[in-house]
Structure formats: structure tokens, C-alpha cells
Image 1 (cartoon, rainbow, N blue to C red):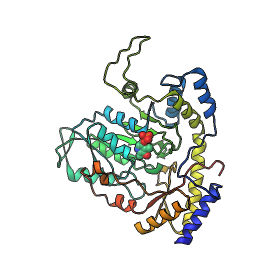
Image 2 (cartoon, rainbow, N blue to C red):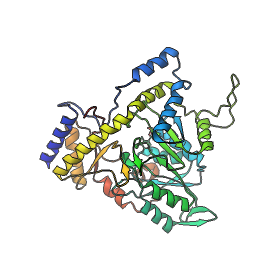
Image 3 (cartoon, rainbow, N blue to C red):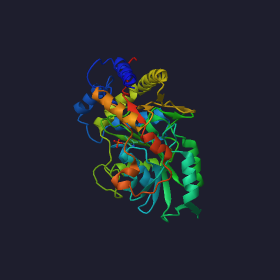
Image 4 (cartoon, helix red, strand yellow):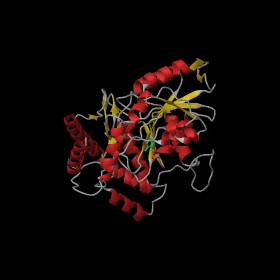
Length: 385
Ligand SMILES: *Cc1c(COP(=O)(O)O)cnc(C)c1O
């Protein structure tokens, strides 16, 4: 196995033209108008939450994703929080999501006071499994008076948050059709899948809401930032209002008409976002080329490399391999990190974290299987691969 591991190091170092030193998992690329737009903010003094770049960034994201409305937020977690609030998720409700996700997904549910319920992911997409969702709902809930009630807790299941893991679209059409049968709202956590499409439609535009993240390790970055996507005009307006302190427009009066949030994205961050959006199409092309090179390489090594499922086009945010078992995963993580190649396993599962360990779970067979085998590889954009 060690000889295979060495070949992997050689391959990655060659792709990144980095014969020695650290190769990070996913670092940003600033090769466009970033400095120009940031200078413009500073020169005009518009660095804070007012400025033309905020609106321009929202318009660029709406245009790129095909979302009717895109509302900037301070980060992806805040975008999820507001989306759930606007689905009317209440403290006594429950929200279904996957255990295999970044902690933000579960945290945003907890912020509303609701409790997460974890169901399994599909083996191939690593995203929420429609089959597991359906069987959880069939076995554990009663649908009466238009509400989906969990038989165990007696609580209402109000929403479902599928996540497009590592950029690979989950089976979102089936998930939405199941949720529709049970009157469950869908918020798509598309934090990782900017530039990924399911049946030709951008991820994050299927559900009642979709959310994006522009954290430093994501496909594009604003330093920190997020976006709420929705096709609903009223909800779009409300999302803007509630993320910007619910201020009633007036030239000098300060009137706020509800308890709301300061989840505004700054003009500085948005300026970075505009420059990054200009480069996004090329980033996706380059990321897909890298994934293709990885895919061919791992085929020769007889190691499974995750490719996009049928009907999907992935941004390959984080390239992923599946190793034989937990022992091989551990030795690979050790070997690569010792050699300054940043690779990592999937996040600690949500149902194993202290604060969520008492949450109800469906069968997590694929989730647990993947946890012991998945490793993410360096995936930063290589310009002109
Ligand atoms: C990055 C990410 C988020 C949002 O993270 P922020 O750092 O708050 O922008 C949410 N969900 C998933 C799955 C993520 O990977």
C-alpha cells in the first residue's frame, strides 16, 4: 500500500507544481479584480453594509444559479438559520437532515429551538437518501390534519435539510416529492455545491430555500459570507428584511418593525464576491479537469474515486476517494499528512457530537460505512491545468 500512497503524493505534487512544502486541502484563488474592487470600497469609504457591491453580488449569484432571488448573508450558517425561520420552524418542531454534514447544518436547526433528526445518505452521492427518508417517514410518523407527526416524540416534522456533499448533487427531485407528500418544507444546504447541477438545474434552487457559503475553503470566497436563494417573491423580500435588522426605509428615522438579525454581508466582502463570481465559470472548468485527472489516475491504482451520479454535474468542491476500511483510511491520513499533503476524513458525524447525541436517527448504514472510508484530497483550483 505504501507504494500506492507514494504514487499519490507524486501525482498531487505534480498537478500542483509543488515539489515540496504544504499542499492545502482547498485554498482560495485571487486572480481577477479582487484588489481593484477592494480599493474601490476603500477609496469611496463604502466598506460596511451599504454599497453597490452587495446588490451587484446578489444579482450575479441570482443570474449564475438561475434563482429568482439571492439575498446576501454574513455566512452560510446564518443563511440556513434565516431560511429555517422563514419556513416557520418553531422550538417544538423537528427537522430532518443527514448526520454526514458540517456542523453548521445541525447548528442552524438548533438555533431555531427545533431538534434535528438524522437519516442516512446515499452511498454514491453521499447526500440525503430519498429511500432512507421515505422509510423513516413511513415507519416513524403519522400524517394527520396536514401535519407530519413523529410517533416517538409527538412533535411535528416541519422541514428537511438535504446537503449536496462535497459538491455532488443529492437526489433532490425525489426528496422534494417525498417532502411534498408529508407537507415538509425543503431547505437545500448548497454551501458546497455552487456550480453543481441536478438535471441541468442549479443546486439550491429546488427547495423552498437554498443556501450557499463563501467561507475561505469554499469554491469561491468572500472571506466569510453566505447567500439565501428562493423563488418566492414575498419570502425573498422578508429574507432581506430580517437579515438587515428589519429597518423600515427612511432617510433619517430609525424604525425597525420586528426583532430581526444583523446578518448583513459587508460591501468589502461583496466586492471580493463580485470579483470571484467573474472567475467562477473558469474555476468550475478547472476543478472538473482536476477531478477527471484524479479519476483516471485512481482507476489505474484500483482505488475508488467518487464521480458525479447520473443526471448530475458536480463542481467537485472536494475530491473524494473511498479506501478499503478504517485501518487503511487511518494509515493513509497519517502518511499523507506526514508528507505535507493535507487530506482529511469526513466530519465527525452529527449524532456522535455531544450536543446531538440524543437526537433520533434512522438507519445510518451508509453514513457509518462512508465515515470509515472517505478521504478528501487537495482540491484547490489549478489555473490552466
Ligand atoms: C461551509 C458549510 C456551511 C456554512 O458555513 P459558513 O462557514 O457559516 O459559511 C454550511 N453547511 C455546510 C455543509 C458547509 O460545508
